Image (cartoon, rainbow, N blue to C red; front, side, top):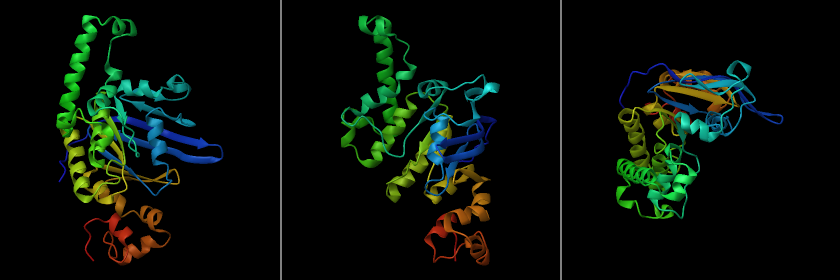
Length: 298
């Protein structure tokens, strides 16, 4: 069970965000406010534009149009934002970190080395100081290593610090990727399908861990997730994309009973079918409908 926390003012504001690849509009004029201290889930069918939206926030893709601001500072925008377009490393320095749908670790490096790489954006030593091995550089490296060990303890990987990343279990690799993201000291954490490929026990543990991070580290979390039980159980806000368009935005209860959302997942006419079975409950014959209404009884 997750803890309810009163959300603050928006930490991230996206206005009219659009991304076009040639003739394909992957994200189409999406507006989204992310409240400070909240957990917000972005859901939608495959190909809805969710990861593209994440990539624009992280600075990997430049929006075709629209504006994105973080803590009132522009990440991307037109003339009104001074033509700002930050690189991914600059976005990270502002306090935004992310994980990926497909785990991206340095497989042949140790667990502790992977976390230390995540701290690179916080290191102050320049190239000359690093070559000369000055006292300040050595002190900073020592502090970074101590912090990295603390992070590994926090995510439950302290005893595996010297293990090679590729030898970790799938669930532990996911946790290592989260630890590396936390190493940059973010206030907004973007998680792209953090429970993908996990068994039910691992999924429950990761869900509880996400809520724990939000509470104990004062994080705001924005996640993409296909597991509707996770989404409905952990989210303060749920935004739904379909073919690049935001079709719903609200609480889990509001979203799961939204006719447009039901039809986006299950096809035309599904919303009426759901209403016939006393929405938000759904017919047990359809596993997909049950996913939209976790815990519903026939």
